[in-house]
Structures are given as C-alpha cells and as structure tokens.
Length: 344
Image (tube, rainbow, N blue to C red; front, side, top):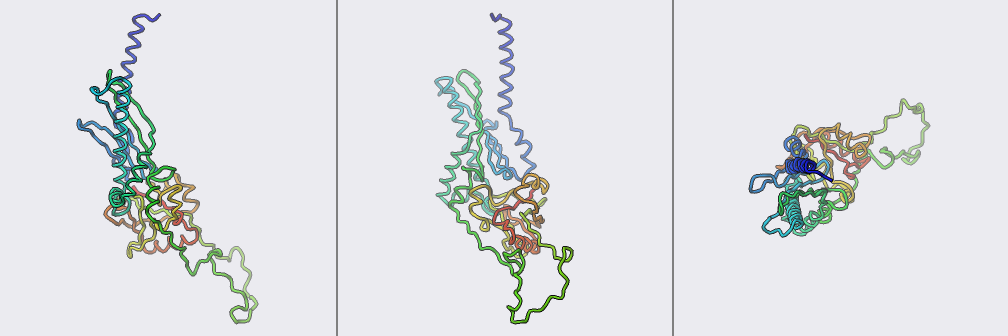
C-alpha cells in the first residue's frame, strides 16, 4: 500500500518534470540559432504572435531541398467543453499556423535572378491552385501537446515539405505547367560520336593513291592522351554573396551568353529526383556529400560575379564558358543536371 510520503515524492517528480518538457518545446529550435545568420543556403524565419512570443519557426534549406516549419497553438478555454476537445482545438490551431507559415516560406523562394515564387503564383492561377494542393499534402513529422490547465492545452506541430524529389514535392506541379525545352545536342567539328575523334580516312577515297606508311608504329608513349571525360560541373562562387534559387543560370561574364539554365535539362530529371542544381558550402563538402552525383572527374571552375537583383545567377569567364560547353559534349552533364554551386 502506498503511504503518504510516497504520494508526495511521486507528485513532486511529476511537477518537476512537467515544466522541463514545456520549456524545451516552446523555445527556439537549435537549428534556427545555428543557421539564422551564417548560412546563405538556409532561409530561417521566426514568426511572433500578438504577445511577442514566437508562434512558429521555419527554414527553407536549399542544400537538402526541403522546407520545415515548427508551429505552436493553443485553445480558447471558454470555447472548450472537455479535455479531449481542448487537445483537438490546440492541435488544429497549430496545424493551421504551420500550413500558413509553410505557404509564406514557399512564397519567399527565389525562382530565378529576378522573381520570387509568390510572383509566379500570382501570375499563374492554375499553378497557385496546384501548389496549394501540394502544401496541404505536406507531411506532419511530429505532434505534441501539453495540458496547461483543466481545459487549456498548448500544442506543437512539425511540418515538412520537399522542394524537389519524392512523390509529393513543390516543384512537381511547376514542371507540369512550365514548358521545359530540351535543346539539340551541341556538335563540334572536333568531336564526334566515335570516341571524340574524326573518323579515319579510308585509303583511296580522296582520289589520291594510297601510300605506304613510313612512320613508326604508335606506342603507348607516342599516342596522344585521350580527352578528359568530365562527369559534372562545380562552380565555386565563394565570397560573392550569391543566393540559392530554384532555377539559377550560369552566364558568360562578357556576352551574358547562357552557359546553363533550366531549358538545357531533361524534364524527367526534374520529375524524378532533383532540381537543376545542388548547393554546398565548399568544394570539399560537395565532393563528400555528392560523391556519386558528381562522379569521378568533376569540372571545377570559379565564378567571377553574380547577375540579377536577387544575385542567383553566376557569371564565369568567356574562356571557362567555352571550356564548359566543350566538356559537356562528351558526357552531357548539363542535360543530366549534374551541377553543384558553392555558396558561402
């Protein structure tokens, strides 16, 4: 039989543990403190209510291609008829706030060097409807609640949405409505499908008598080295203040000729797995995180500046522009969207 002192001790433990859970769940998440001011790849927002206390935290992570929202909600005790009803109302409030802030984060995403996604939503009514459907289908990762009184509850809802990749993501409806042109393969007289070398001439076909070869047979030491088969492109824009976007472009600095943009990427690449670029904060992290994606021999060049008011397009030298387009002929890494941009 439980005596009086045991009851007192158990009650004290419960009372001491309860505020700890409540305090931890209502504070700013650790990732907002770490990423709010240091990483251009993550857009962090803190939303406050009328009382000045945070009601939601949100982040748009362009490296991981996801949006995450943590929202809090309470119920009105005067409109609550029971304890279970209080829990239901608090969770419903937190969910509503989470979806509202999710929509705000989506509207702040940079589409390209001049446009935010909210402008695209206003311009294309059908796109707005489809994106709203995707937002409603965002995944709820966690729900918690804490009873603050007989009919008063505080709830927490964690909501997540993929920007690209997966079966339900933000870009899928966009790609369904925005036409993507796949250009014809670029041809260069120096490169052909036969191993990047011109086809050998057949003796006698050029109306000249065939001559016996007097040169020494080629050995491994005398054969020219085969051209490098670059598997991807890494553009280092460190220190330029560039910002991530859904459809960034790479331009030649002098002529503003497009070296890479969304029209050069195969549409199915968008729908199946990724956007047109991946982001990393350093070349080393890109090689470590995307080793399979970039392959054995990425072509690494440095950006010389940014273009556009939102600073999402990168400028490279005309020499590097020609180098990228020539290297792309062999392995078509641009068509496969095997491009990583380094921002920090």
